[in-house]
Length: 215
Image (cartoon, rainbow, N blue to C red):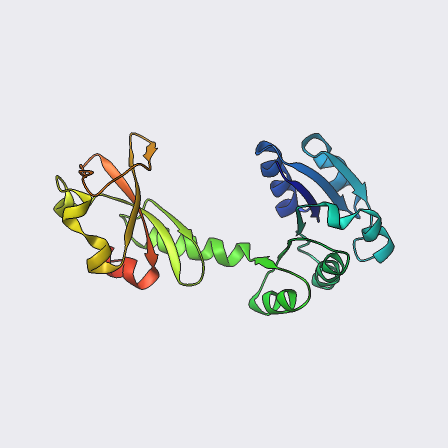
């Protein structure tokens, strides 16, 4: 279990709070809006109403005691930027901030944020890949160059072992796991035989995946 400081409780921040609660983490939620704070009380460990751009308020939270500090402010970039900077100044171990455009990503990374979440861009990329090809079942971006895809076993691979198709050598793509009847199987070997009722999880560079699976 990790201790999380979550600042900003709009729709995005509230959803983060819900997900962190389901994962069993301890969350201290902060927002200047009392209604937003009250709305997340059932799913957080603690909550405070306050202005995260106020150095005294932020310092009193004991920033360095949290494993992760998340800045989920989405409607006021100036406040988001100031908050990220102050969190790092007060000893934030891992400061994660939300951005809404490429320029915000650059500013946040240069002013305290260790990592930046860009949900609109990430969702747009996911939708573009997922729905531009009928055979893509799921998609996860790892960074700007790499991804994980879930695809059905291609017909030409059915009945062959992972070692026989040898896609790592041919395409520089790695099969991570196979899925059958909704269950994921990570313990695969070169001898694992692929069948038509399976899907496979593969990872590699976008270009290699696109070439291998004709995306």
